[in-house]
Length: 425
Image 1: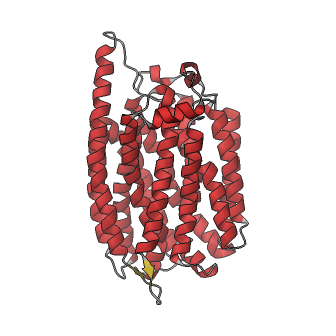
Image 2: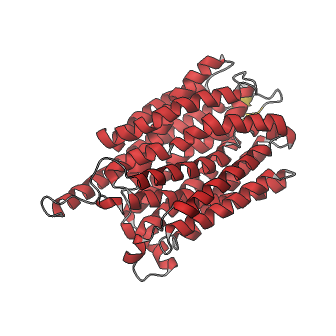
Image 3: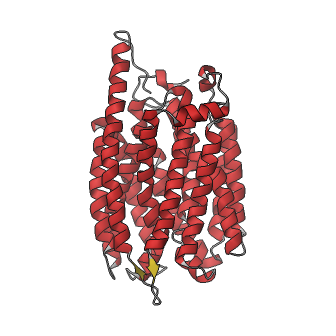
């Protein structure tokens, strides 16, 4: 049953399964991307590469994901979302396997491109599924649980991945992700129902015409502009997070798993609370609060020198409160923008915008941050100020998007027959 017609406050058993399987799927996708950051210091040493080359590995995934998202956007609403999800997930598993057997830098770079081509589309398909199956008033909660994958990757994935990397080398975390992904893939095949209601309302457009129609919609363009800057912060800071912790903050490789685990545990508790709060007080308000907290923490963190582990942990937790508040609230707000027949295309283009702008941001970060002969990263504070600037700019952009979504909801409510529940966008 499509829950856009459901007014109850409790999720059905099947809805809970959908949330859980999307969360596990996102866990594998996010872990595959995030595991590169803690492996950064190890890859710089073992592959004998520069910070610029390492940022290119990160950017390669982003650029290929962005390109594939744009190419797939015109077709995204032409197929059953379950079938499209399985096809892309299979390609992602193959790409990750290639990362797990990469013998050198060039092979790893190609493997990241392959992984990005398929993995970059999966997030947009997942968000389209959430938009299809859950009303707007519940999407904050859904996003809160699905985005727990971000925190779970820190609690379970990164510490285990780092442990395996320290024990058996940097290839082993990718092979671990392959094993987990195969299990998730079988669960999707066996239990996820077809998601094809959108096929009944499709207009007679070619894939190219559908793509052009979507990218030329003014309200959609505003959202893509906001997404461009939303991606900047994470992609700029993440690639060098571990190298900064080891070389500037004085952390050891043995302390990194504990740091990620503690941060992740708190993030797992915070995510659902943020999602519930965004449904109760408003998604934009939560986004503003998260932006204020995040900007303060970024400035403090990027200007640190050698720091005790417990202080780094506390600052990391507060930083992720801001990050999760921005991620969950903005993701839920974005789902209210596209019309039902455009959801797949919108989410695909939005994901592509995020990946491409993130790739550019990672490349710029590689130009700003340099590594001194002693190993210390220089100009990380400048990077932090750039990130803060993008945070405040997105606060302004999201304000206008929130107003547009509110007007749309009020118009739908006024047009609905009296006493009849309104199906959220």
